[in-house]
View 1 (cartoon, rainbow, N blue to C red):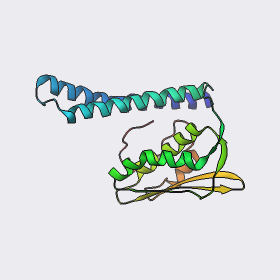
View 2: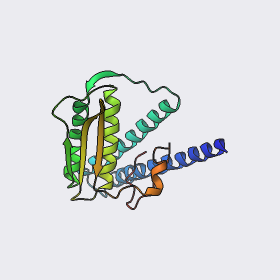
View 3: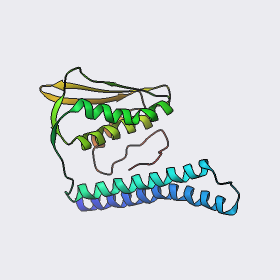
View 4: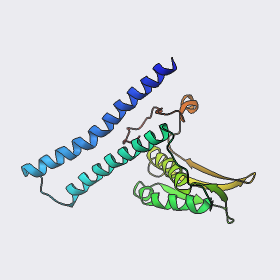
Length: 192
């Protein structure tokens, strides 16, 4: 039963990856065909559209590579004693332009004192980036996202909260399962 469920998940993942690749490839193909046929004049907008779709494909490939390494147990953690505040604030600042473009208020509230922890700063930054990225996709214009940090019983704690659509209570038990996707009221913009 467990093997059958794993195989079903893998099959579903492959279908989702194929679907996610089709959209950018279709956009690239149509844009290049229009440019070649002279239907559209070459310019920054067309090149920018193709470049954006290539970045989307690259991100998908990187996500799949990271997933493969994790599945094989080859994900390496480079732990060091760092101030979690710095890691979180840098991750939030990288996403601020996206929040501004979407008319979403993004705030980062950190304590005045250091939040030292022995972590892999790059991985924690990746987690914060993923959480805030998800919040950006789920939060409508005019909404807000708050990233906070605190010390709880000597451990650093990071919280991301938003005014978006939220997660259906029925999905809460499964959101950290590999390959699981919660149903959404909003159309998917891609991602893995």
